[in-house]
Length: 266
Image (tube, rainbow, N blue to C red; front, side, top):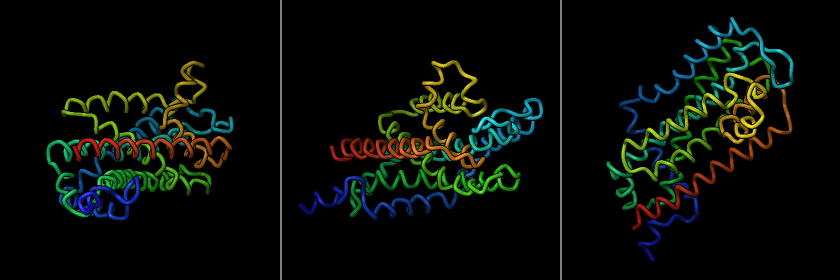
């Protein structure tokens, strides 16, 4: 019973001990903190190139309420959503190294931490990295005056739901991967989601069939939510965004918990 208690968390998704794994990751990254900033610049460059470059040619596009808005303000919340998702997904890929090569979790289970703590701790750390990117990007939007509504102050905590969904699904996918080549499959999913989730064009620009598919994208749901907040257009549909992203994050966490049970306790 004692041995079982050491590898089984008191709750299905972990306990407060998961914070110890987050603390471990903080200590690891303190000597390579510049790598944490890498994923922040990609959406920023897109904002500068597409928003202030192409945006001059595009002019205005229909906003969430149908009224015209600048192209730069239109893509800014979408890139905020992508920034938080990037941070969570990039960190989730590191789980494969810790699991299959570094064997970190095998050592962790020799401590009072359980499998549920490992799952929750890694998701928490992925969410932390996503939150760092989102915080930096939100500061950029405020400086550039791309948050015309006070509702935009809620964009940062709302973006954490995007990181939760991206991190949960990302880590869940990584637990099925066996080699570094498998990580290419992550980009095969992330890039289309980034380009076709209403990031650069209104949903109405796509054919009706494609519109129905895009609305299931977690990045689209996050973009829809953040675009509404930053422009002050609050819609009942945003409740769907919140519930959908939260559900994806919890489903991903449940899969990670079961997969780690199988991989670490076999």
